Image (tube, rainbow over all chains, first blue to last red):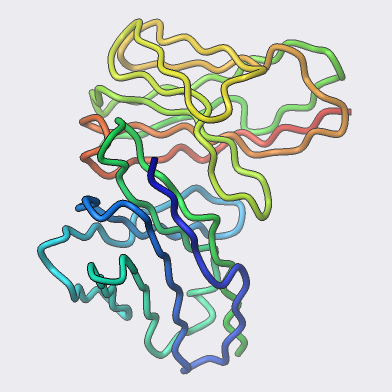
Length: 112
Length: 113
């Protein structure tokens, strides 16, 4: 089945810097991807869902890149601020099963 | 807007005890999920259910039972709590079976003493 690897597990950046998180997946047929944000003590909130037809997706303060050739999904937080400090999880739909496979998460700390 | 509610928020149990966690959603979502979240291990799927009275095992089903009594509720039972166990259990729901984004509950934090 689908395997998802997320890097890095921990990331510290200065306020105003970019934060870059990457997930690689194994199933070349994967077509639907997610990024979730989890603030301390809170549940997961959907940041963005990405279809395989679109390689660059822009949100508020972040960009999601999908490289289908390399099977890589990336989240780039541009000009990070302390409110971005949280755990971020990528997720990929397993095309052979009725479930979503999550990465192990990246704990981002934005220093003021 | 809808809401997905997990009870209890915190659960302290004793070794060997059977513990039940509950989840309710009013989105009218078909599919519901139970995940376990451990530090450094991400989210692991325990059970999911694609409709009322349906149960499907996830990757971590051993040591757990689940029940989908009705469309809006999905409960999880830890059959025998392990000493010093500490984890967060997250319930989620989605409209379809893996094609829709999930809505997560706020979690139940379990500590076994």
